[in-house]
Length: 92
Image (cartoon, rainbow, N blue to C red; front, side, top):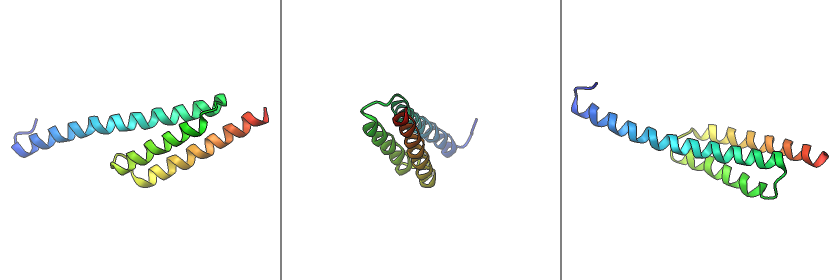
C-alpha cells in the first residue's frame, strides 16, 4: 500500500478509470459479438448492428481505451468476417 498522499490519490484515480475502461471494452465486445451473431443468423438488422459495433469501437478509441490503430484493425477484421459470413449465407 502506498504511503505517499499523491500516490494514494493516483491509485484511486486509476481504479476509477480501470472500471470505466472495463465497461467501455465490455460494451465494445458485446456489440461486436452481436453483429457477428446477426451475420451468422442472416438477420435483417445486420447493417444496424454492424454500424453500432463500429461506433462503439470508434468511441473506445476516442476515449483512449484502445489505440486508434487497434480500432482500425478491429473494424477491418469485423467487416471482413461479416462479409465472409454474409457470403456463406447467401450461397446456401
